[in-house]
Amino acid sequence: MKYWFTPESFHLAASTLSPLRWRLLAWSLFAFILFLILQAQIKFATPNFLVWVALFILFSALQALVLASFIFFFQILPSDSAKTRYWFQLYRVIEWCETLLFALLLPLPTLSFIYALLSVNGITLF
Image 1 (cartoon, rainbow, N blue to C red):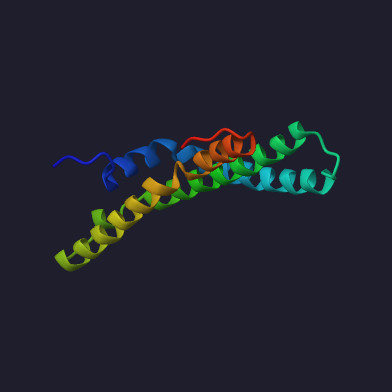
Image 2: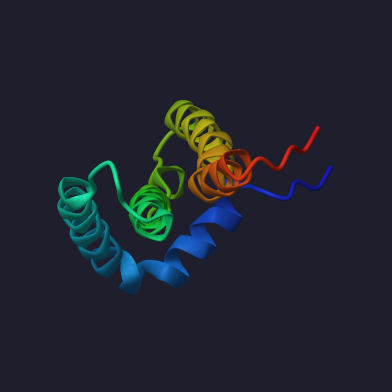
């Protein structure tokens, strides 16, 4: 059976994106600080556009943080350097758990922002 997401496919993606990991972490920190500054400026009579910009900044910071952590987790697969069969099997179980976790986490900030955008504007999906 062929899977869409495997530890090896995630490792390949993380290796490809590896030079961006520190930039993503820096962007995430900058965006969180910018969000906090905007949040302090938002009062009761704030235009909706400014609220949506603040929310977009927050969710893009979350997305950058998740992507950076994905790169850090999958940059090196511990099972590649396992010396015994026991450690290889243990590392593979952990890598598959991380794969399942990141298969859910990677699209989550973007999907949450889209859901917030649709639900606040009164658009119902179901």
